[in-house]
Every structure is written in C-alpha cells, then in structure tokens.
Length: 442
Ligand SMILES: [Zn+2]
Image 1: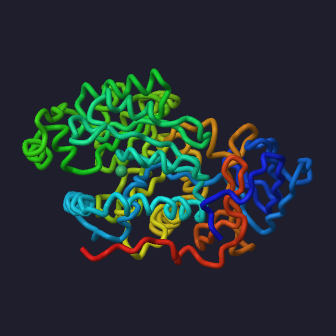
Image 2: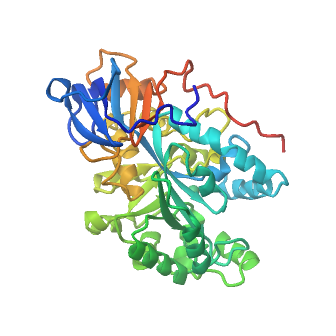
Image 3: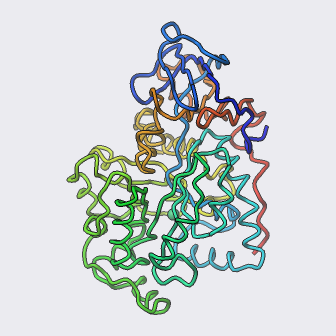
C-alpha cells in the first residue's frame, strides 16, 4: 500500500497493544499499551494497567517503538540513487555536479521526492532532518505525512542563493509555518564554504530564534588539513572558485565551531569522521553539547577511515544516525534512506554493540540532533505519537530488539503525530523497492 498520504485523519483516541512496547524512556514493557490522544502519547504502560480509549488496535507479536529518526539527509539528491560509483568523495562530488547540470535535472529531482518520503515511512522512519539549497523542496515537503526539520543551507558567496545571511533569512521567512510537522532550521554548509563571519552570524541567529542548526564538519582529511594549516586540495579549490574564500582558522574542527558559538543543544555536527579534537565536546555541559550525526553506509561508500562514534558514545556524546543522500548509496541498497537498514548494517559490522544502544542512536539521539529531544524519540506522556511497529521475526529471543536487527521487516504500523501512515503489512521485504526512480546511463 502507499504511504504517501495518511490513511486516517482521526485525532480521536487510539489505543495500541503490542507484545513489546520499547519506549526508550525505561525498560521494554512486555504486553504493553500506548494510548494516543490529539496526536500525542496520553498513556503508556502494561496493558493490564492502562485503560483503553477510542479505536483499539491489537498489533500482536510485534515491537511498538518510537518512529526512527533520520538525522541527516539531502532529499533533493534522491533522484541520483545508484547513479555514482563508490570511492573518493571529491571525485563523486564532481560527478554529482555534472549530473545536476543536466537540463532535466530539476524535474527529475522534484519527481523523486514523493517516493523518497514513502520509502522512509515504509521502513519505519517518521522524522527526517533534510538539508537543502533548493527553494522548491520545503514546499514539496509541506503536507507530506512525515515529520521534517528543513535546514536551509548557506554557502558564503555561492552563485545561487542563499549566499549570505540576508538571503538565508529571506529563505527562512518564506517557509510557511502551517505544516505542524515542519520545523524550520538553518545549516551553514561547512567551515571551508562559509566564512567565519557568516558562521558566527548563523550561530547567533539559531540562538536568538531558537532554530536547530546543523553543519557538515570534519568529513575528510583534506578538510582537517585546511582547517589546521590552510593548505592542500581545499586551498587550491578556493583559489579556483572563490573570490573571497573562507580563511583557515589554524585549529581543529571542533575547536573552530565551538569558538564560533555553535555550542548549544539544538545543534548537530554532521560526520566528524576525522575530527581529531572531538573530545572537546565532552567538556561542554550535556544540555549545551551539540550532537554528532554518523551516516554508516554512506561513510563506507566513501571508504572513510573508521568513525570514532563508539568513543563518542562512551564519552556521553549523543551520536545520531543519518543516511546522507541517496546519491551516496549503491544500487544494491534498496532503501538508501532507511534508518533501520543503517542500524542493521551497524549491527552486522559491530555485533558487540548492544541493540538498545543502536536503537537509541536511531531515536533519542536523532531527536537531540534535530533539536526535538523533548518532542520525539521516546514513547512518553506528552511526546508526539510518532510510532512504528515491527512484527517480531522470532519469539524466542530474550531481547525483543535483537530479532529486529537480525531480520529487518517492514513496519506493520506507522503513525506520525497520531495519524496512521502505514497500517497494512506490505507484501514485500526491505530488499525490494519497486518505486525507485531509474537513472539514465551517463
Ligand atoms: Zn550531507
């Protein structure tokens, strides 16, 4: 069935029973019940202790949990899934730019959005943090039945807007606020494409208007070389393309963004693959500490060195899961924007990580990265009823999450703000996606 539109519109009470309710706010509840009213969680607990209200759905041998959160994505690139070979990021970027210069690129990019949203909902993702420079994308996302944090991306001096703070503010103001599932946000692209003055101004704007902020940081070794010494590939690139390029701060990545004022809880540092000074984050108070976003499969696509996310988690840093764009996923990955598949990939490659830790990355930490920690990511009274239910492939496992990560199935039920978006079990597995847009040969 299609998940593009809600299949119900009721705001009345809804009661959900499942063999396991994983709240992420306490231990899993055996034979649990969640009551939803007006789009929010009104009650949660053992079924025998919580009174049912309104429509009553019995999900049976299933895990009911918070909807998964994709903390980093570029939906505008969804049309390029499988179009580019894995390997060096800079070569990939050059090839992507060429693809986007094709005359039909804008139409193809627009056409791919509904299927991308549907694919996320069909794999249990109920919220996405999307970074875009396209003025058409937030409008296309408005009204889509997925929660979205729309980051408007700034590149200082870019040929297309937003290229300065005035254009960023103008684009932000143009975002209509009548979609209750849409949160406005800003993203200075990266230290090497945004001047220090604009970075400081973005941090100030985010603090003053209480906007989520995200920045790509320490993605490549070349970026670290430029940050610390002002030399290398990025310096040469600046000389070719920028009239007034950002200046190297001659320090580490983390130190630079913290000194620019990006040190508040609603901020996300995307990637941090090569941040040799990430431990600076642990020195900040937990409520002001930015989250880190790790994109496991995209990270592997670019063959980056091992990500320090395990040390970060041990140091108390919230590490969320992102997918990055579909363009950094191969043809063989049928759901490039699926957080569940990212978690399963991590589980396969690092099987000693506890399933609960992985699920926390895909829910609680994702909510923190998107500045919605008090709204989503947990099943708790007053939280948004963004929920996903997965049938349990095996009933003999001591931990209900193990089966989910070993044998991922499509969700049997998904709702966003209490509105049901997927209610039937699609007759397909996660390895089959008939909706993917074919890419023409280069
Ligand atoms: Zn990105």
